[in-house]
Length: 173
Image (tube, rainbow, N blue to C red; front, side, top):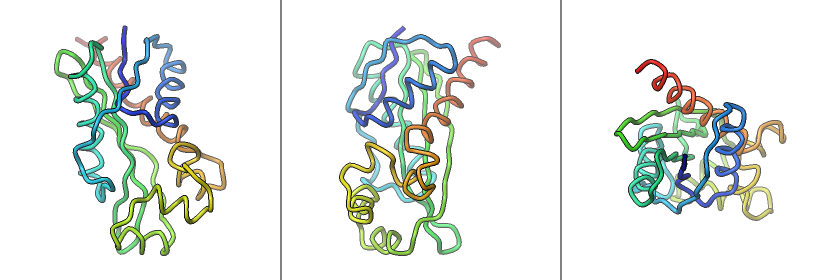
């Protein structure tokens, strides 16, 4: 069975592969550069969730796969504090859509200021850490958990939720 992953981001691709291995699900993986059709920096749970759904739907539509997974990272405001938010979607050829959300934590004020000014989290994190491609590696979650959780592990948890829902639906129907 082919599973298209709606991204070229290596942390997200690894998350899907790790989750499927843990779940005992065997797929042929096909990364695909699917668009989110939301802002480059999603700023709410709703927008981030929609970005994940859009990535999965585009990936499914543009390939011959049976299922597709979209993952989207964003931020959201809670009582004046900026938090990470992360969503995933799994869509099937027969029209089912499963969604799940993941970890979130507060971000420093200097990151929040950049978001308020219209910048994206990825480049802000590169500046904050003086590194490159944080979003393809440890991600903001890795930086702010002192490496205890990296971006791939964070998304892996979301993908496990998606696969679990899909597996349960298949066994119930």
